[in-house]
Picture: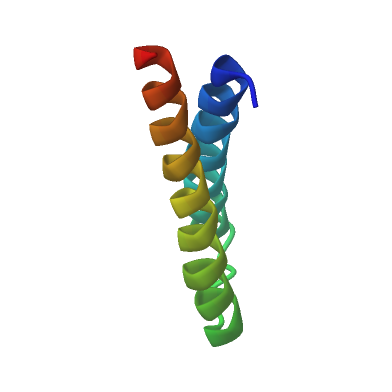
Length: 62
């Protein structure tokens, strides 16, 4: 994958879930199921985003 695409996709996958989690809090969707899904899915997406950022940075070094 292109190093710039990896960095851009990584940033998107880190920023968007944080925004979604914050906006769900504002709309009052605080049931237990939403909290569990929000916790698991958002952390997984953030982890993938951070992985892509690290891959992009390592490609920039080469």
